[in-house]
Length: 186
Image (cartoon, rainbow, N blue to C red; front, side):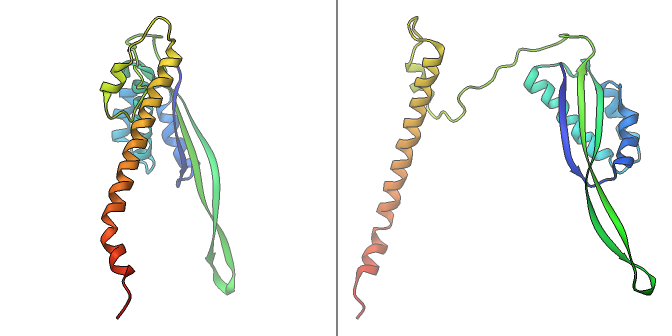
């Protein structure tokens, strides 16, 4: 299974970044991380962060094992160039190009399916009281989609109720100021 992570608009020249990327292609993830510790290039910290991000994507989103991953490909593309001017003799100016690049790292499994874990995704994130959702018991007649809709409705009602309560409290606290400014000046 292919897993990727992207880094956009890196303020390094693509030619310099490709030196590091060519050294890492085809390596196992752990070996690449240890290799990055000893490389002396300006783009190494960015590659370390990008590699950690790609491994985290693989583990959390797809349940892949870190020990089974390797770097299948690293794509370094040129992005926009910022144009700056450098003053020269006799009132002339020469063009400077500040280059940027985008980097995409693609990970793959050495052995397909080895060490893969089951990924559990959370359906409802902003639930405050789980007791309300537990009240709805799945019946044979109710489908999964209808059950999800009912849960969402309960969550929406709770949020609306809290919002109305907060509004009432705010209106009560402003009562003193309303009375003060309603008075006529003497």
